[in-house]
Length: 388
Image (tube, rainbow, N blue to C red; front, top):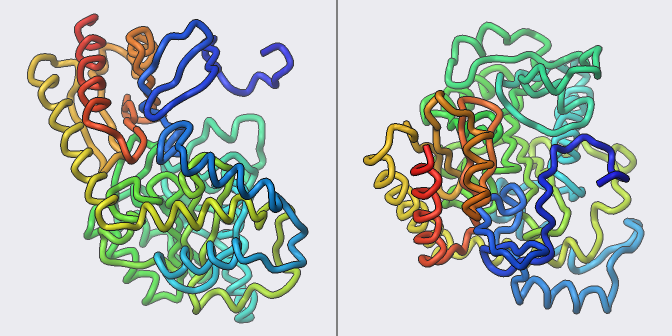
């Protein structure tokens, strides 16, 4: 690791390969992966169809300049818009680039209307990425350390507190941006009432609603996108992570009302429309959107929750399990930190991801997790709890 910029607190565990829901280290030891590349590997590791697409598409073309059409890109855009909010899609390489795109679209939409609106209301404990704009947007001061001054135009309310949102609205408010479920912020979901109120406020005040579904999207919560469970639609949708099942890609979808503000030259991305990523996006959306696949996500979620509840009956270490689908969070008793628990679980060959708030440990297995993997999870989690 001596040649890497030391911005990630990496484990000394050297991973050599993976298969299904497991990763293997250089010593041949097998680890149950409940991180999935942080909600990226929706089909697990070394999925046969994904590797087949990678091989076949690489023999045709991996990347071309975005001056030209490709059937892969047009199909990916068609499926993403059809299955989400309609409108138009733009593809990028990551979640944070997709967030940046949403911010640009929101501001340009009002510029296009000859309005001086530019402020975006965001939320405390949110996470939107690592660029200068995205760290200003998220309500977590630690990500701003050393990168001040904060980019102007971002205000922060409390999640599920509608009055804190209303108090920030002004003649300058262009958009409200939030995650339906805050992943990094402790797997904290918006309430049905709160999101409905936010949608109404946006409609009544000519404000755009931006939903960041980088972590909650692509089937992770049991519907293709989490907003479907709240009975509302955003004006701009941000998606990434599992969108290509492990290949770097992100996307921003703008509704038909909003999309016309973006004209040639107003945005771009060198790699963002490459045929390889687009081919994978089309396949992933086709598979994950199948009703049976999404129903299996919900069933797996119920089984994991049951396994955790069973362990919770025997220990005071776990105080709560929260979340939706396979974006779940276990709250750990404050007598130990979630980081300590993650390290102890790793000793038991269970890979978990901590959140930065509420002492929460995230459970992010592959979406096609098997019953055997769920049983193995229960055994390894029990063993970890028994240590304390």
